[in-house]
Length: 94
Image (cartoon, rainbow, N blue to C red; front, top):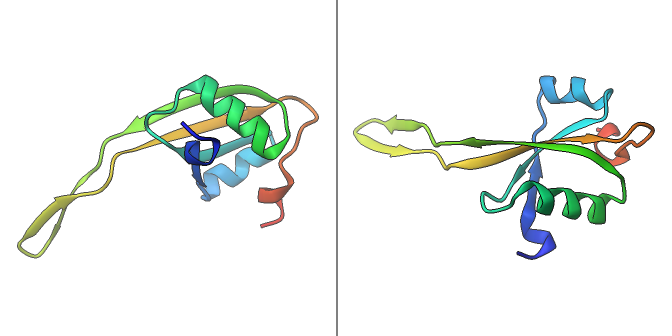
């Protein structure tokens, strides 16, 4: 898997913003990526040292729009904790 395919986008919510003070960042990642791939890619792209990676797999929810039924996409979320003294400046400026 190529480096640009692993991390898709950040999760920007009130709860994740509170984690930025502790050096914890949340991203949507490719469902096929494992923890070591996520860690290696994150360190390569953002040039910071990663302490730990926690992953969560989510199944899509069933949705209806009138008579049409479907479901939202499945996705994988990674909670990345940086080592002490490290900070990700890109998301802190938002």
